[in-house]
Image (cartoon, rainbow, N blue to C red):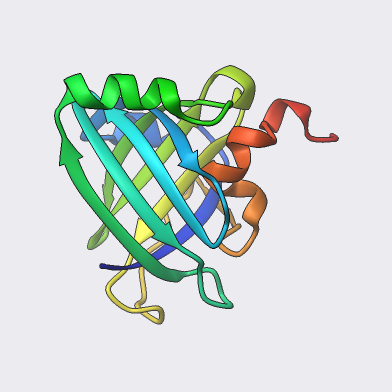
Length: 157
C-alpha cells in the first residue's frame, strides 16, 4: 500500500517501438485535494478506484490503495468526477530490470508525455533509456490530479 515512484519527461517517441503493451485510460477525480486524492479510472475494459495520500518530501513515496471495480460501475462514477478528465494512452516499456509506464496525453494535455517508474526502494538503481528526459517527481504540476485542473495546453510557454 506504499507506492514508490519516480516521474520523468519523455524526449522522443522512440519508446513506442519498445512498448510491449498499450492501453487507453480515462480518469477523473472524485477528490483532487493533494492531501488525499480519490481517482476513478477506466483502463481498457477495466475500472478502478484509487485513493492516494500526500507524498513525502522527495515526492517519491506515498500511500496508495487501489481496487478493481466493474466497468459498469466505473463509467457512472467517472461522470460524477470533478471537471477535467484525463485522457491518455499508457505504454508499458520493459527496460533493464524495470517496466516504465509512459503516458501520452490527449485533449487539453496534448503534447505532454511522461514516464513513471515504480521502485521497491527510494534508492533503488535503474537504467535510463535514451528517450528518458529530466526527472519531475517532486513537481506537483505533473501530477494527473493537477493536470485535470490546470491542463498542459494552458501552461505558459
